[in-house]
Length: 271
Image 1 (spheres, helix red, strand yellow):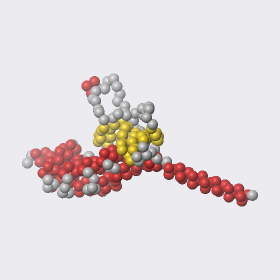
Image 2 (image 1 turned 90 degrees about the vertical axis):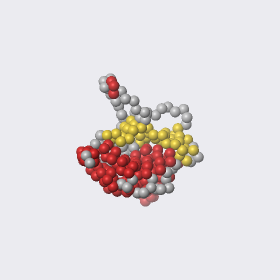
Image 3 (image 1 turned 60 degrees about the vertical axis):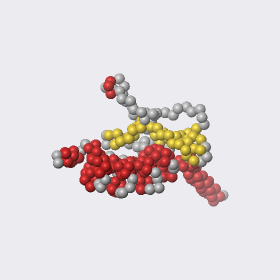
Image 4 (image 1 turned 60 degrees about the horizontal axis):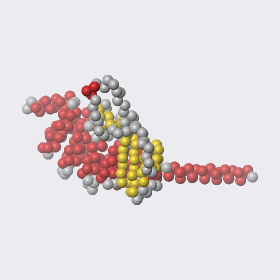
């Protein structure tokens, strides 16, 4: 009798474990999205450090400066902010996914705020893991249409604790993608750290081919830490074969406002 009880207990544990595994698998963002063939899905996830918004507008800061803004911004600086304290909420990131016949047709991104009551049917997934949703978004970025790819990259880059470097490097080098999508990937590389990223941006700037993508790489280098950006931009300003791109490097160098950059610029003006 005792042995039967043990066997039964083990069977129940195994069943519960397998059932839990199936349920966990079904609860991934990819599984939840794919479960809706046609309709609207909304979900939230944790925002990366430096990302904040008020529902309509959002901004992303790094090292105390704004590197990305979205929305319509109105300045009340003439009043000195004496009456109203500006509130920029640290998330969550809000994502709306529109599906048609099993395909993702639209991604709408917000930060902060609250969901509006919606009279149309909506599948509200609730809070999901930032890494889980970012993984799904990066897949959409690599496989989706140009518009979906750009929006998916943006949404993934706002997620907390996500390393998008491998995907961005592949997309930046993917000649089968449009100039717009590659530009977006190259631009976002400027927000990341790592020697491999720096080397890739430098290489893209010197490669023959699309001037706009090369220009984007130069601007991306200009947003990197000063100890990386200033030497790289000085080298480009002096050695890039394309005159227009050398001018881009000089402009990016001036925008860093770093002492070494200013000294180089003053030296060039003195010649």
